[in-house]
Length: 165
View 1 (cartoon, rainbow, N blue to C red):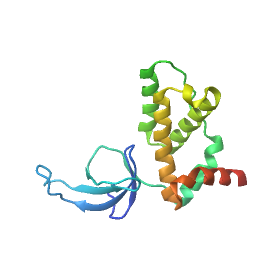
View 2 (view 1 turned 30 degrees about the horizontal axis):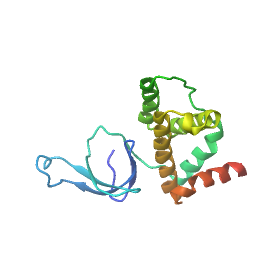
View 3 (view 1 turned 60 degrees about the vertical axis):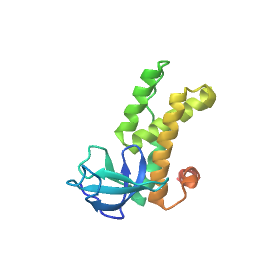
View 4 (view 1 turned 90 degrees about the vertical axis):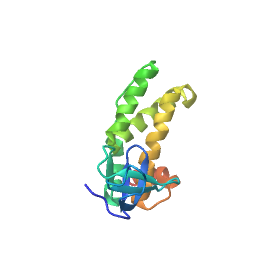
């Protein structure tokens, strides 16, 4: 699937990027390959990504898809997971992140929020806190861009939409 200049995409687990250009780049050793020139919507810098990369990329949700996802949040449940092994915790949450599935990420966020309410955020492992923040950044960033709202307003938007349901 090729993306067009100006399109907004999800790039790996990095978040929302804008496709600035598609073409050859003048970096030694890269001349005979097509690249996307990507700029993050949140953050700065430029990334050059081969068009034929194995890194996950997809178009961002439409506003209707974003609202549909938000409407489904009450029915999304996280996979209950308990372990004291840092390695098992990392593998579990890493697999959720690698799914690139917004429903799975919302389930993970809900699961970790519930845990933070039960035990307190300070009692969660650092790994759990990091994965919760990473999932929130990905989901909230995409929802914000899809809905045309500020990223800081996403949680309030979700609460208001679900309260009206």
